[in-house]
Length: 231
Image (cartoon, rainbow, N blue to C red):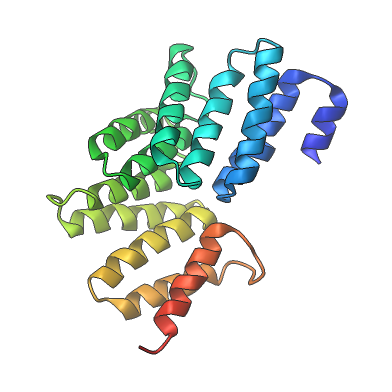
């Protein structure tokens, strides 16, 4: 509905705003890379046609996240780094905690731990200024980065995952709670604590409708199903 109204206004900046939130960011949070890519491409086209320099890096970041979710991690990282750098150059903190959490998460996927920590530091700087809406995800991603570092103890990794879970619950952010639960599930399964892992994930999934098609929920259902299968 918001996209339809934005298109009807024939106002490029309003359309870029709607495409960013109702199109790109929402699709990225649902882990729908094709929809994210479509929104990003339209934002980039509008920004280029109408000379909207602020929206070019936003579209670039969204395109980078779509690439990461499609398996093109290195390309996606470079796109996101470029977009975040441009926003920083304009002294804009627009969605910085979210964007750097994507970048750091991508770095964790390919073992670039130091790059990921550097990205997260920018998110924590914003958090220190009072913007806490992505603190749960920043903690979860930091835990994933630490888990990729063989010199870090698993207890330190667990501490970040548990903190992410606690913050998400306090903020009633069910999607971020689910992501933290999945990360904890994997850690606990690796330690042989399968019963505790299953109880956590089943409890978290109970908040969601069974018909939901979001990627994280389908992942969680699959993990529970695998654990329930004999052998």
